[in-house]
Each structure stands twice: as C-alpha cells, then as structure tokens.
Image (cartoon, rainbow over all chains, first blue to last red; front, side, top):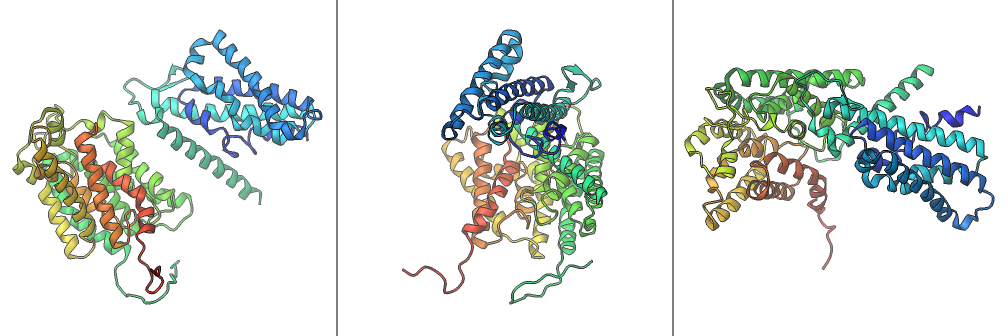
Length: 200
Length: 314
C-alpha cells in the first residue's frame, strides 16, 4: 500500500506527462540525454531534501507564511545543487545555464510540498519525492532520447545512427520539443486508454 | 453511417460535396502537374507519386487505427498530396516526401480532428516542417529539363543575393529552377481560371493577395530599382501564383466572411513582401499563408456580419 506513494509519481501522476508541470526545464534542456539526466537528478535531489525538511517542520511552519518558508528551504538546496554541479561537472553546469538556479521556481517541487510533504509524515514524503523525481527524470530521458537521436544521431553522446544519417535540425529547436512532447503525451494517454479498455 | 446535419433555415440546396470540390481542384492542378513533369521529368514524377500515395495511406492508416470513419474517398488527401509535391524541390529523396506527408496528414490534419478542423494548411505545414528539419535539402534546386546536379538558386534567390533578374518569358512559362509546381505561372493561371469559372474558389483572396504584392513591389521598385525587383517579377517568380490561387483559397483555413477574405489576402501580401524585401529568406509565400492561417479565427470573429436590426444605436 505504501509503495503506491512511490509508483504514482512514475506513471499514474507523472509530473510531466499527466500533471504537465515543470514545462520550462522539460522543453528547454531536453536536447540531449545527458542534460535531461542531470536536470532530472538535480531536481530529484532538491525535491527529496526539501520534502524531508518540510515534512519534519510541517507542524511548526505557520500556515500564513508557508509558501515563503517552502521557497527559502527549496532555494537553499537549489544553491547546494548549483554549486555542486559547478564544482564537479562544470561542462554540464555551463550548458544547462540558468536552468539549474531556476529549479527554485519549478512547480513540481513547490507543488509536492504544498500538496504532499506539508501534510504527510516523513517516510511517505520521501517515497513521494523519489517517485516524482524519478517520474520527472524518466520523462526527460524519453523526450531527450527521441530528440537527441533525431537531431544529432547520438544517444548519451554515443553515435548510434549509421554514417550519412541526415540530422533533423528541427528536433534541436523548440518546435521539435513541443511536437515530441505532444506526441509522447498522446502516446501515454493512448496506452492508458488501452489498459482501461482491456480491464473493462 | 450517414451523418445527419441540422441547421437553421433558409437552406440553399446544392449538389456539391467535399468529393466533387476536391475533384475540381485536382482537375485544375493538372496543367501544373503536366508543367512539372515536363520541366523536371522523372524527379517530379517520383516526388508527386510518393507524396500522393503516402498522404492517402497515412490518412487511411490513422483513421483505421483510431477507429474513425474512413474519409479517404473524399479525395482531400489526394489534393494535399499533390499540393505538397508541387511545393517541394525536385531533388527530394522519397523518404523525405513520406515524412512530409506524415506531418501534413497526421500532425496537421488528423490530430486536430480531420478534414474541416485543421488550423493550418496541411501541405504548407508539411513543407515548413521540412524547412526547419532539413534546411539544406529544401534550398537545393535543379535546373529545369537538363536536371543538372549542380544546384542553382531560384529566380528570387538569384535576385535577392546577386541582383540578377530572370527574364519574364521563362518565368511565365516555367523554364526556371524552383519547386516543381511553382515555376510555370501559365499552367497555374489556367488551373486558377478553371476554378474561378467553376465557382470553386472566389477571386477575393487571390486578388487582394496579388494586388497587395503588386502595389508594395511597385512602390519599393520606384524607390530603389537597384535593390528591389520590379512588380511583375515579384508576381511571376516564386510560389505566389500557386500560393494565392490554391493555398490561400483553402476553405478550411481561411476566413469565411467577405470582409475577412479581403483582410486575409492583404495580410498575406504584406507578410510575403516583408519577407521577400527585408527577410533572410528569398521567398515568403509559405510563411505568410501559415501566419495568416493562425489569424483566421480572429478575422472571422471580428468581421462577422451583424444581424439585421441588432446593431448599436447611435
């Protein structure tokens, strides 16, 4: 039963494909799988840490100022993630640019604090945060995978397309991001619909 | 299953159907197809046949998979396929034609609800997709008839980047490089005349469009004939004739009110000329029509005629 808190973020309430939250990083950094994975993991780290703290403090935080408190806690961990990436992976940090500091305003994170962590015990919040973070990361990997293969002929920076492959420039552009995301969401809904049909 | 359509009176009875309209459009495109086959030979044949076949197949497959009514018989997919092929460069590989057809039929038309529900012109969006995806392929042109492998610029490109004017005679008959169906103004005008006589299309949008292009290019040509091409050149070169008569008159994606159609045509003309005169691309017909397609719902709403007796009183 408790496992449901973990799995719901990956499929049933997937932050990108079902809740359609956090579109800014989803569309902007999904040009390559490496960026998608680092963005996903950074977000998961921030989500997990702030969920733990907020869940512990949930009875102390005054209701009137809760959003401000959440933001301060989230911003702290975003700063940690930002500096960590800058120190350890300067290349990735450079290519992700402003999108790492912008995790502060990622609606997935604030949404989970408001809807879940501020009302639930610590263990459940941890499962919820990891599930949502993984759901976000997986969707980014799928989206970035499709785009990277078509736009550059590579996956995880390894060339997988044969020699003479024509690159689809559009997939590296924002238009490609919107189209791919739309198609993935419709495919996702189609699979869910098929599942419901076969059940009933 | 036959659908019943309910609407308020008065009713005007007419035998035309989607199928009959589409058949007339296909007949009107025959001169352009013949010109394309004459000037670009086997390459035109390959592009046209692969576009038409894949458009029809994609329409059938999508409707079959989604368990919708199969509307392949209304010939609209055939028209989309022909128009798509006519705005392609001749040297396009077959798989790119198939991809463009998929974008035109599935992404532009069927996902929005099929015929009558699409916002943008399917053929033009198919080309716009290719333009963004494979810019080098879409800007490589062949010489007509000889089909030189050496890529040459279109008349508009030649003028824009090297200030070389192409003669009016080859422009009118079509003996120039360019998309396979846009080169011969004569063939397109024959088709357009047929559509106008048969009352399939109305003169408003094409007239407003072409007149706007004519006026703007006359003025700019007067200001500086060195840089800006003469008006007649602007009318004959590029895809203006094809776009104005066959794309900007699409029933679905253009305004239905009379006033709106004038606005649409003038808007297309202005955007085309802005792109041709000051844009980075030599040709702007495709983007101008797509751009105005996006405004169509708004134009329809603003220019809706008032019911008699319900207007504001002074």
